[in-house]
Length: 318
Image 1 (cartoon, rainbow, N blue to C red):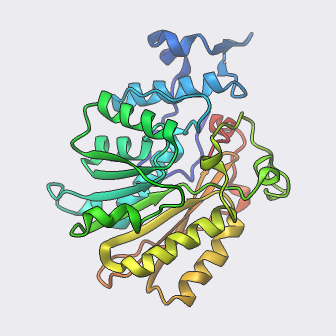
Image 2: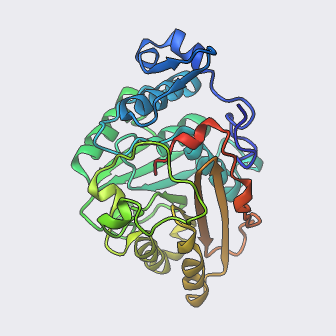
């Protein structure tokens, strides 16, 4: 089964999807969640959060040498989607064309229990991360995941107060210029949105997997739109403290008003893209106050490009 052709060109899963049978034979924790049909086809029950967690943990272990723990009560990240975002950030900061010996510094706003962006960015590229988190459980798990992978020298996990984005988090690091920030904002403004009421394009099929996540991970006042506007507000004050500001959006309808907000505020460099794995679509937005940055071409994907045959359609998490 082919993965979506719209995945990032450098995404390791673009042309080589995971071999569930092989992974099951190698990892007993994953094997117990595997189902085999009469035709011998291996599959997972993506309605089962334990199965989804097992897949994520197994892929990180097999393909990146990372060992993590994730509580079922918090968001379970999907590896290919997170990898797309990492590769796009590489494009933003010119990582492929730059001196690899130069230490790149990033900020992950709301790193989550998995701490997946810092773990992937550090493992793949040797980046340094400041990872912030407001939730006690997520903070404790993130810190543990960093420590058990011996990456504490490159990933600093900090507990911050509610509603802290960039300004407060950077108070103690006033001399450091960061190359980028990343963020998965809480998508929803209320319980109705979180349950899928009036929050999806009616032409899109519903997600096929269970959704997990703590309140601070999935809901915020005003939803992702207002959350990102607050990041924009912080960026207007911080300006060149970061070379690129970025976020990943769960709703396409958030993209236009955010681009308009950046235009109104006179932000000189703006770009966006779409990440698509089957039924799971995300939109990423980035902006910069630097004149010398190279701006990747913005990319839109037609809705028809959704590939319902890919196995990643089953993963509908944030």
